[in-house]
Image 1 (cartoon, rainbow, N blue to C red):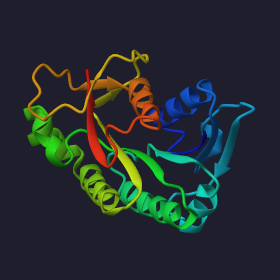
Image 2 (cartoon, rainbow, N blue to C red):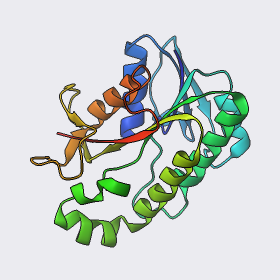
Image 3 (cartoon, rainbow, N blue to C red):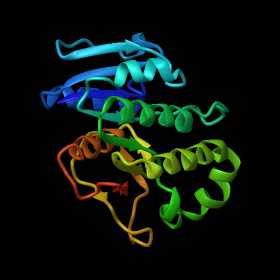
Length: 209
């Protein structure tokens, strides 16, 4: 497939790019600072741009088979990168006829909130991640309002561990025995799998070990 990856220079985004290339896809990486990607491949094209620039996003989206987003920002970052960036992506996809969208958010959104441990719900999120979670909530609302063929991936705490292919997905918030962590490599594995898997079409799937 001809894939477009937003947030390509982040930890999960880079895994998406690398694994997609390994699987034989052609990849366009959209990045505000392309040099951070540090990858070269015959099937990799890097497009410089800011996801908050709607015109740049629309120009990048045209001609692709599917779009994957791993947009993120530092915890203290106030700009609505996730929500506004995703709004621009969705609009561009609607305008250009690209239908499949797989987007990264986080465990704790919507009906997955009860899966978070006590410390996350009442200490870490309110004190350190309030802005990020609020932005992700708006982001998910935009996606759910879309008529596109979307899937939301909600991973637990991200690690730099290897791709194992062995993780839980689509579990209820009351699932026992969760480790509340998963590697970025396994999250990318799940997101790329969704390009050929209809189980979570227009649904959000929680991810964890």
